[in-house]
Image (cartoon, protein in one colour):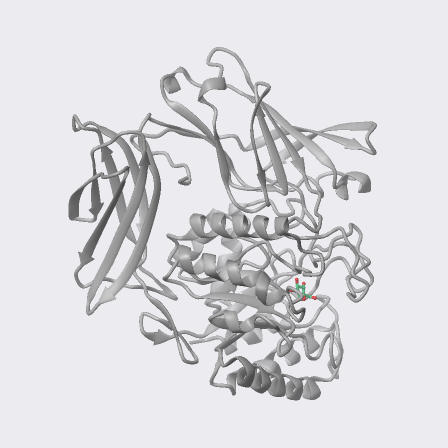
Length: 564
Ligand code: BDP
């Protein structure tokens, strides 16, 4: 499956816009609303029972198709629907998709009307259980986060809806189905290997990278070609050199039947000893754990918000972020490629609890991981896969659970390291499986509240212990303090802008004193909406920026600290 695009052999149209929404509250009260796509529906209305609704909802709309599309195969492509989607066209059930952050598509060709309306319906269900990724819907008495409204076991609002673009597109009977681009470096040459497969019948592809052109015969519906680019301009942080790639597909009569325009960056990643090397040079991660979250639209993809976020990350001199706690939109990865940011790309497996996981949980997790790698493989910005955030990895069965997932990553992608983000080190049972140790710790906040000096000592000894135990390079993927913008205090006290600034800057000093620490990611880039509970005031306030994307005090100091 390839992300839809308009080109000389494909048509593309958007189904974004205003749709109809129907909700069934308590199985009897039906509510009908207008709804925006893409967006979460939760914050569009004024009613709590709609905002916190977690049953099924029905999205629907009509659309017409141009006669120009007659004779083509017509597909519908959803970039993401959260959590479960069941799709119908003109009353025919097309299929289903589970997990909320990766794309899926269906062939509509047989069911489409040309001279009348087409009626599209999606039943969207956000019901999380022990078997879903992420999990929710159970109570572990030993766990502190048991009292959320709506009730979830993770710290962000369970937004629901058609969160990303919906496209209709056409292809001919034979078409390019998948393309994988691998890059390597040989002295000053860039070495690019392009693999692909096709559906239908075709005889050759023509591959063009700027003025370099080559033709490759198709065998067993697939092709593979390696091309050297002399004096290659490499892709790296802040040096987002991208090459255009054109692949044209021809039938046995020499007619062009499909085309694909891609771009790629030449770069090589290695984890060697304590170091994370990009193109042979050590990289240090400065940046954030983020969220897809914004007022009114919730988790809906929005180009303007995405660009503002990248401009802020550039302004503050960050070089990287983690897609906490799920795969982000394809538009965000395109921007990261173009701005030259390093991305740690994460599956939606947040807060796994192995007391409740089942075979089905692992199966859904594997599928979500596979879909993520498949989707993001060709993005140079993605430098590492994260299989999970803060699982209960102090539990004995964590290792057995993660083994097949790490194996799956290694099978699908030999070019990138794999990590898991743990809050249980040094008691983590599974960290030995991974290439990089990612740690979330909150000294000075959840532990040792208000005590910055003691927090520094705690972090120092923890880092030493963790490094001794796992012997892996370490990224601190979360640390920070909730901070209500506008609250000030001298001496610095929790929740004030001064406390956030002092704590973050002091903890960074500790991290930088350890040669094996290869990154500092603050939690969070911006404030974000959570479920309601007694430790959150209008959501999580650990943002360096407010939810509206304005800087708190610490931002100005980080900008200085992250220069160079
Ligand atoms: C970590 C989680 C993150 C939370 C954060 C916090 O990974 O999702 O938002 O703590 O408590 O445990 O702010």
